[in-house]
Amino acid sequence: MNGATSVGERELGGEQMPGPIDTVNQLVEAINGADLDRAVAAYEGNAVLVVQPGRIVRGITQIREALAGFVALKAVLRSEAQQLIEADDVALYIGRWSLSGIDPAGNAVAMGGESSDILRRRQDGRWLIALDNPWGAQILPSR
Image 1 (tube, rainbow, N blue to C red):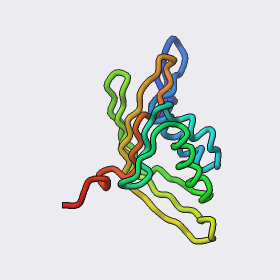
Image 2: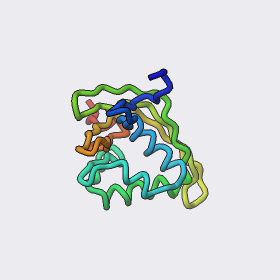
Image 3: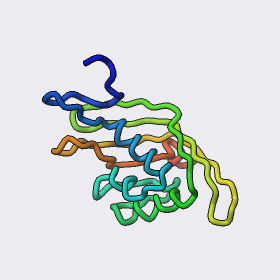
Image 4: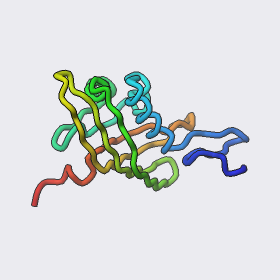
């Protein structure tokens, strides 16, 4: 290999296989492109998403509804820093992100956080998000 491989890709039988970072980037690109189907495709069927501290959704139907809210903002989602730790078929993704957009009433929306996500490699080699916590430690109760 000549170093042109993107972060997270692996060589398998001469083929480039996308890695966990590629799945996260797919989600970011899908939200920025208002492509709800592609965003939802980054998740396992029984995945869990922390929509906000104290609010969790489970499964593709609820995740689709939650992500539709971000897509409706005509959001610009940016991943500002990423770190990945892998162990066999499981990966911990930690990233800093920011999002800006316009809500349905025309008001500016801006938010950000530090994400901690768990991805799992499927038998077909694809990495999908099993647990998506975009709020990181903010979900912990106050002291």
